[in-house]
Length: 181
Image 1 (cartoon, rainbow, N blue to C red):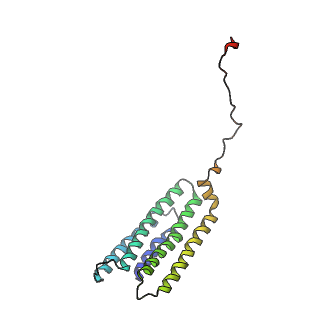
Image 2: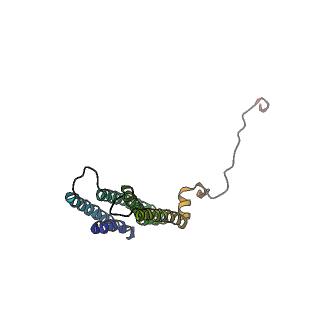
Image 3: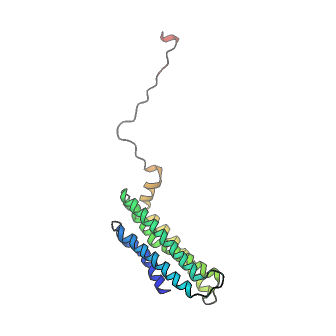
């Protein structure tokens, strides 16, 4: 379990690197993904076959899925940096580092709680699910609050600035009528 935790954290910590370090960020996440895959294959080979998927297999599946989402998060961060949206890029990094990390652990602990494993106290897993849920909510609300200006500028129509200069004149053309002739 310990090596898988290290590889998972390594994949998330890639977001702590500067956005200009695109190669190390992607390489770190890819190494974490490949290491998790190899570790999963080694662990599954030693587990007895019971016909149903084990919690360890679920954990590895969730971890590898979040490594893929991390790669997508890197791509979005690189794009936001390239178009000059620095604040949104920083927000995306925080979402991917802390928000997605909390969500991943919430899913893993929820799955452990639902399975009602005899070796793990269900009260402990229930408390962890509650704490992680509060953590996810608190993180996203506070992150959106801290970056509210960038979010508002990106998604609200009120940020449209009219063109400089006087307003355009409205010219009304009259049709020629009988009195004009």
